[in-house]
Length: 430
Image 1 (cartoon, rainbow, N blue to C red):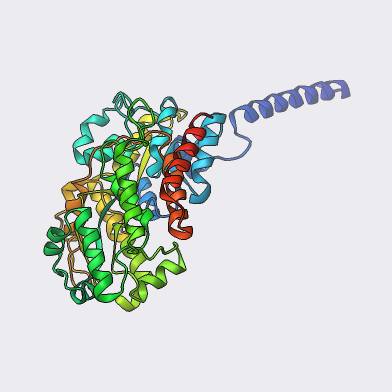
Image 2: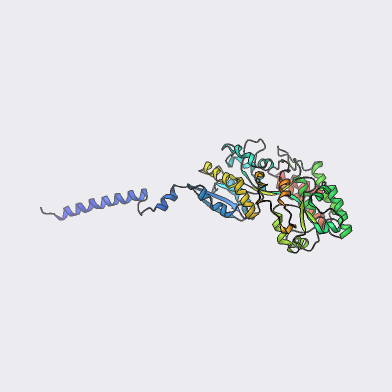
């Protein structure tokens, strides 16, 4: 059989067409290159992204998610804490570029108005693990109607009285932690002891009056707003807390130290005999005042329990895998992992079942061999269940600003109180 040039051309066109069809088919299904087992495995995993900030979650704990959940690939994004809240707010408003999981600081109440942007963890049977956590902490991420939980508790910041045992002894005050707790059980007792300290030693009992105001307000069930988000910070309760700070200022019992190098120097050189601070301030104090090692102790703070700081973790509704994301955060914040986070990062657990674990209750040389966790854990379980509201930070900042002016410029307290209220009401009206 004779094969003509026309027949060859025809066959050539047919082959080219088949090749083209095969090429287009492969382009669609992705067979233009061999697919490795690793790539196929990655594509089959549930992809989750988490946003968090420095010292909020242990990086090694996040790395263990892959081991605990083989079907999950977790992408971590650590964001600067200075810009974190603004970035999260902007993302929720824009409804674009949101992660699956988000960590939140103690400003979690500011995100309650955005609760529709979060997965309601009560819908995922979050109520079943409620008993693992402290009530007051759990409630901070709960909407006022108690129908929407936007996050699970992470760490907390229970507050106690840090005091110099040697200076208390020199002033003729009790030095044993239990005795100090009993002797300074009220704020009036504490101020009276501050006067005695100043007379006997010339040392200040308080570092700032702002810290006093912060602690006093954290001991209340009703702070700046009620559950209808009406401002109540102009009432007698907050005014009483304000007056305690003013009294300390007028009596010259506060060193008025500014945060940073000035505060560190004041602690290290013995300018201040005590302060009411949170559990996370232990490490700050040790770094700031190395020359005072062994001289500090902790006791229950005057007026009862309080809290300063602590974090939360939630799932955004924009996530394509809300159930898997919830399982991840539930595991991350279980009691065992919170214990490990405390041991490694000093993040005080919100899970009281582990407070009596031997790993937590250890003698600490900086605090003269005292087992400080015993005091912190007792304080943690004595914090009132309080409502903060989305504008809590607005009110706090205005009061703090005016207290600072009183302390540093001796502004008339009555005028300062009035100016704080006017600023708050002006900002709330926007």
